[in-house]
Image (cartoon, rainbow, N blue to C red; front, side, top):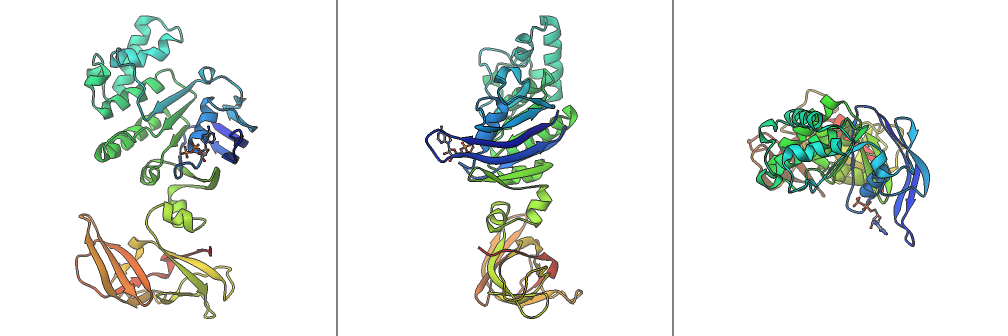
Amino acid sequence: MPIHFKNVNFHYPNSANGVFDINLEIKDGEFLAVIGPSGSGKSTLLKMLSGFATPTSGSVILDGQDITRMPPEKRQLGIVFQSYGLFPHMSARDNVAYPLKIRGINKEQRQAMALEALDRVSLKNWAHNMPLSLSGGQQQRVALARALVFSPKALLLDEPLSALDAALRVEMRDEILRVQRSANIATLHVTHDQEEALSIADRIAIMQAGRIIQLGSPKELYDNPVNRWVASFIGQANLWDGKISKQNNHVETPAGILCCDTGNYPPGTPVTVMIRPESIVPGIKQEQPQNNILQGTIHADRFLGSARRIDLQIKQALLRIDTLSREPFEHVTIPAASIKLLPAE
Ligand code: ADP
C-alpha cells in the first residue's frame, strides 16, 4: 500500500532540530531508501511513519488513510530494527508466529503461517532454534519473516544490516530485496550506508539538516547530484572549483580548460566541476573529438584488488582515477560527457 508524507514538519520541543517540508510518496511495491549523515532526520521520519512521533504539522497517509495520529499498533506496519528485537526465550517459529498470536489467529494456523514465512527466508530447517543459537544474519532473517508474516501494509527497515559484518551485509541486501520483491510491498529503508542504498533501492531520498535535498533513482543521484555535498556523499568524485570559459562549451579548471556541455551557464560563471574517478580512461583515446586528453605525474597508486586507484597530479589539480588497467600511464582521457557542472559553492 502506498505511503505519503504530505507537507510534514516536526519540531523537537525547545530546539531548532527536527524535519521540515517533507513531501514524499512511496508507491506500492517500491523500495525507497532514506540516507543521510547522523543527525539529518532519518529516524525522526521513520518515527512519524511508525507512530512513535506525531508531526507538528502535515499528515502521513497510508493506503489513502490519514494515520498521522493513529497509535503505532493500529498501523499494520512490518518493522525490522538493527537490533533484531527477537524474544530470546522463544524459538524462531514462535517469534515469527507472535504477531499472529496478538491478532488472535489460532495456534495451528499461526504455526503453519510462521513456518511458511521462515521458508521464504530460507530458514525452515531452523524453526526450532532459539535466537541465540542463530548467526546475526539468520536472526535478521527471522526478524524479516516476523515483520512480513501478517501481510503488513508497508515495511519499515531501520538500519537492518548495521550490526552485521561487511560480507554478510552484502549478502543480506540481496536477501532483503528478494523478499521485498516477492511480498511486493511499499518499503522505507533507513540507512547511513550509501552503497547499500545505491545497490538496493528503486529510489533514494537524501536528507541533510532535516530536509530531503534530493530524491531520485540511484543512477540519477550518482550521475546528476544537485550539489557538491550530494556528489561527495554518494560515491567518490573529483570536485573542483571552475569557471565557464569564453570558448563555447569549455570550462576552466585547475587541470586546464576542458571541453564539456556547459548547458545554460553563461561565460564567466563560477561552477563546481565533477568528474567520477571511474569515468576517466587511462591513455590517449582520440575517437571522440570532444575527448579531453591530459598529461600528469602519478602522485599515488593504490592496488585495491578489483581496481586500481591513482591520484594524478595535473597542473594545480589532483585527479583521482579508478581503473582496471595495470599498465603504467601518464596520459588520461576524460570524455566530455563525464564532466558534470554543478552550482558553485
Ligand atoms: P538521524 O536518524 O538521521 O541520525 P535524527 O532523526 O535522530 O537523525 O535527528 C534529527 C535531528 O534532531 C538531529 O539534529 C538530532 O540531534 C535532533 N534530535 C533527535 N532527538 C531529539 C530530541 N529528543 N530533542 C531534541 N533534538 C533531537
